[in-house]
Length: 350
Image (cartoon, rainbow, N blue to C red; front, side, top):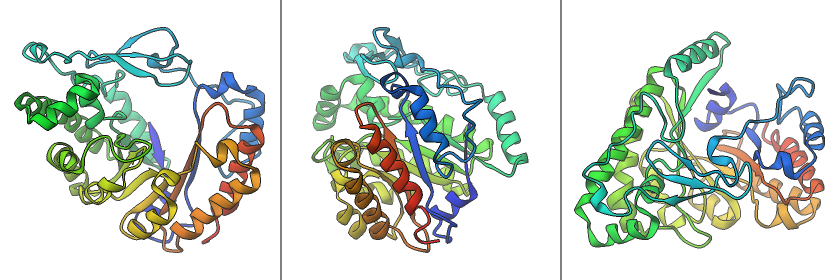
């Protein structure tokens, strides 16, 4: 189970954190695309990013069952996943409800046993949560990535789902109820654990514009978000949401569905746009560029990008977090430049 620090909670609540919370996440595929020892050395050189890291005892991450190249994986919903690179989450290649005729006999998974992708041992989770509490830490829960819109697309197929929404397909309502009821079971179990924050990760955006219209989002997806975030807020639990892609056309509806923190990509949405439309309304968990500057730019451009984002989106009161996801292909000098800049500017408002 993951933990969230008191400093992060203060940043989300605009309660003057000690520093900007920063996360440097290394995708599992990186461990066979780069020299592992080099990555480990970089981690050891950046204690702010990895405060509990020990190079002598650190173990490389195990791949999840859907991250093995050439080995299809069937999740708890019956969706078949395939990937071409170990460590990279691939795509759903077989949709169990591509034909609505299959709905009559379709049964959803049990949230007492799985999060939809893998088995969850809730008894063990209770023990972990108790241990974190005894250490003065706060546990954080999460729905599966793509818990609502994406799960519907996994089950039906993206084109089928968009046609369903356009046509007002009545069977879609039954499927939405099924998906939402499952996720509600996960949310309530995390609340029973005493989670201080629950993450609601989803992908709604493309490179330009969202994957569904604002009207479709308001009609079919926003109500799910509202229903799932309500019990968290009632329990005093913070709500964090993630979406990749250009979500500007959906942002107002996303925020008003009950968020405390929103993780969104910087350049595809625009740093100035994020500052003008979201700063102060919700804690911005900015997802640092992985497509342009950090991949193809210079270390100086990387430093300038991250400083610019901190200056435009941050404040002494809080309301800013930063995350970078490292994927194969980024030059090592740029990897180091991102790490250096994140550590350099995390204390800009301290």
